Length: 178
Image (cartoon, rainbow, N blue to C red; front, side, top):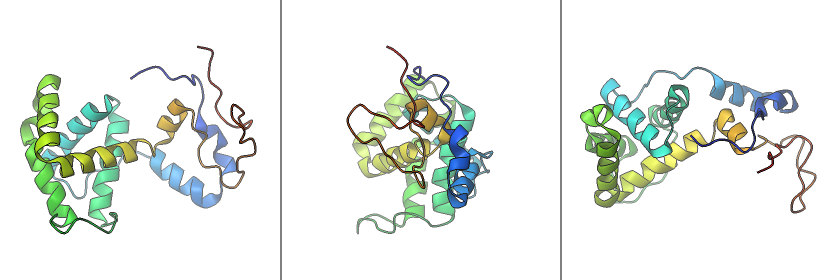
């Protein structure tokens, strides 16, 4: 992973400023990842490898939390609520897509994985887009990633005051000199 421009910034120091409901959600995101409920062990292993490759991330906890995001959405049926007419139900769509990765995906070299993902992108773009979207969504919902990006976390209830270009609120991350 590249080095953060916000070294030493930790969004979690602001947790007491968030309302109780928000704190509950954020604390749940910071907990240990739950084992998959929807995906089999082999499917989960292939997805972990794909997530790692797509994000260029090797932190097992971050990868597990992204997998938890995808798995939880499918296990609890909390998807977007719409899909193209020609697309099968979400559970079938994801199982078919992960099957295209193949059980061996997790055990192959990064160059082989990259080639397989390129093939998936060209041959089955709907699944590749869904995989990429949910991977990025899950990743960017995690407080350690917020800290890395310099995102100050939920603004509710404190709100943003300084909205002019180049100004930041006192609680926001400050970039280190380049």
